[in-house]
Length: 314
Image (cartoon, helix red, strand yellow):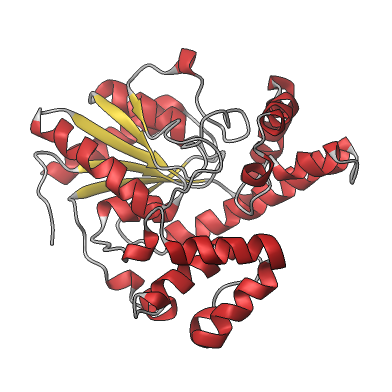
């Protein structure tokens, strides 16, 4: 199944600290378009500094996908798909464009490609609730062992520590499907929307330096205070999850388990590793038009992007 839009959906993708948000906003100003953030952490209210969320005062176009749910609420690629597509299609019917921007590759593909998620991906699923409770009571190994007992092929492709994906695989198994088999068929899924994808690539050494500088800037902007505020609101479980880079490391510091310097270094290391995973993910998609953002020149990158968009129409 595919859905025609009046104009192709523009996507700006790439690793963290590559300059996606700045470029997306510059393109959106020119088109014009609104921006749909495809970031699995920026959907959470109150998690602003640590997720690199663009401050409201700096937004020059309309934004969607930010502050959608409270920390701790269930959210997934399936729910993002259900959230984003009606907005994109409603705006398209009105002749308005939406630009999809983000570094969560699965969120991007869940929107632009014909992914059909099993019922287990939805909120309020008893299978998810059961294994989430098992995770809390017995830890990641117990949940992974449960998957390994019913679907060893899927267990072998998911790290024990990635409990969110392990539980998703158990949900999928309950639907009579296999996570491992779906993973193999990933590249064969057809497009749902016509799209033009622009990717930013940065030399690894330069990207690592940008990430380090970005974390330092987050600290100056009050990241530690943000972590303390979330803890005071009872959000400990949400900000110590596997995905909450930039938050869980500081919880360890506030609990007296590490020094502040160690916590900052841990955030930088985890973010660099995440950036590497993002690069690996996006490199697999042959549809992406890559631009070199090592020497970041916003005006030049915006112009090159607009030329790609215009060229795709021809």
